[in-house]
Length: 481
Ligand code: ADP
Ligand code: MG
Image (cartoon, rainbow, N blue to C red; front, side, top):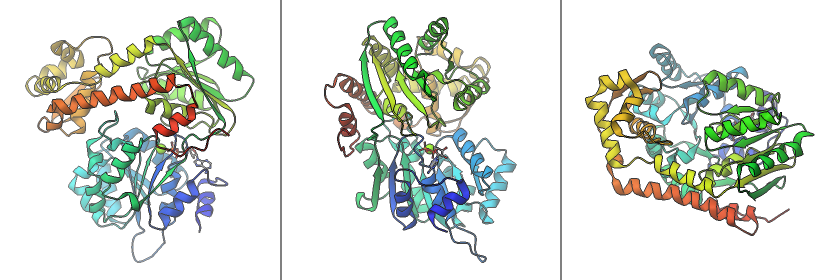
């Protein structure tokens, strides 16, 4: 069965999109690939199709495609979707009971599964590595590959061990995928895989999409923002499809929700403070087209692959060129005209600068948090983050340093557990030297600030905006169509 037949048989889609067919060809011929495609572009099929095209044989187990993915929640969704199509896929992560996990380890050894999804942290477990060693790995897929970049907010230390993981599984053909990566990050990805530039073919379609109109509108006051939102909603009201208005702060989002409510403009709101179930419901409501307008923070987006998003508007300046670009990439996947509008009010920059400061803990704070976890475990477990914040004198608005520090400590293997409600944290290792390196932490803050500045330069850019974006991401540009 060739690639197209495999697509039709398992997924019921008529044809490949964009560069999918070329990428699959490359991988099937044993070539490594780096794929940069916007969210919703269809990256998964680039490794799922090759995974399904392996030779059947009666005397040995079918080769396995190993997918590294950073997020447990996404992994589950992806595997569920595959299983509904009758594809033998599974995942292994810490959300499973020990018993279930062991069953799946055994499944690997027995030759089950065509696709196996894990987080890179799974390689810390010897049982896993031993099980894998008994299988022929057809393909290694590294999803969300930008997580290797220590400059990104998604940084995952285990992604820097990719070279080692590739070796463990016999240096198979490798495909790395991400929605955004500057040329620096692309180079990093290739290096971390232990590959050279010549060995890896880059596939990068960019946003050379003539159906997207990109606009920056200067605004002075909230009234003007509201006016712009309403104007855009009205413009698209006649057409089927949806729109997203992004906000930085939940507080601002709520205020605008109120104002829009008064104007009787139906909408839903989505942000990280809502309960999981509520978020699900809103997402379904949006995906089904029942409510065509969503006001959202950047928590909205993962798993949003609606084809007919007619506009993506930013009512507050986002935190970086990268996140803005990623968010507008969701507009107009169906190829019909769509608007990407950024409302620029200078005062919003102050909010973002403050955000950056409050999301970059310094070495001293890491030390103090670690000490609390070691010496005051009982209080931490009993009174939670509020108590910790009190102790740390870190109670200002937007101060995310505690949460950031905990997630970094977890990523480096210094702690395990949860810090929602209730807090259950276990210290599992020493305080990592990387988090004690003041110079390095300072450099990280500076890089974050530079990414915001790049966005400001973009906003102030007079010429062709698409050209600016292409240059920033190191893309070839073919000009306005
Ligand atoms: P990404 O990982 O790039 O964000 P996904 O791989 O999750 O995107 O795909 C987004 C959506 O597009 C999915 O619902 C997928 O089924 C759909 N899709 C991908 N490729 C095709 C195709 N060739 N034809 C039709 N639908 C596709
Ligand atoms: Mg994806």
